Image (cartoon, rainbow, N blue to C red; front, side, top):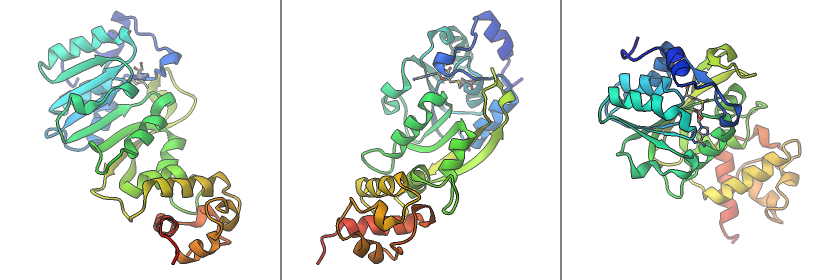
Length: 280
Ligand code: SAM
């Protein structure tokens, strides 16, 4: 027992929190497991934590027991609020629960840096939130690290290396400005109800600056075009970006006959820089 509060199965029975598919609810009821996820987020004692979708509060409890300075938890399903209020009462002044849509809330209005994001995300908004957190108007972002549960297949796309099938836009977007690592993989049975696929927790730490210089909009255009036609040679896949694309590919030391999958982040950034520069 991590905190003297009732076991999660009792909490769920007491508040009739039967999981609903429409909310993307797959709960973690094993507090040893939620404690492992909280630990994967690193030292919490000097950080505020933003949690998306606390549900009955298994991960929330682990974050608080793990010493988080403050936790802001945003939950869309109002049925969970009484259970979360009980946790807030147990840890006075440290848990703020907001009922609402995580996509509509700015955590900076409630939390003090450094801010860590930790969540067992609803799968239907997981990728959208990740993309949003990875593409703020200015870098560094509001968060110091993201510790997030994804479907395993998505976690593998985030951490993928060149030359693999999972490698693509998501890997490049995340790895350009952050270090992602899979820290835990979980079978479907770890959740109630069990989803169809395995899951994985990814820990992502923000770099102070992008790994290589590039204009984010141009880099995104290049990787979108390259991977939308990933089987094509780059000189064909990127033809719409510039009439003299072969010149830019050579300037970036990329063979025009290469395919997107073979090209690393540094070369994509060099290509974005070449496309941004007016040709002498
Ligand atoms: N954190 C809990 C756990 O680990 O057991 C619940 C995880 S469950 C996969 C996802 C949670 O996110 C649910 O409680 C669901 O109601 C909530 N949720 C779904 N969509 C949301 C949204 N747009 N904003 C905030 N919470 C959302």
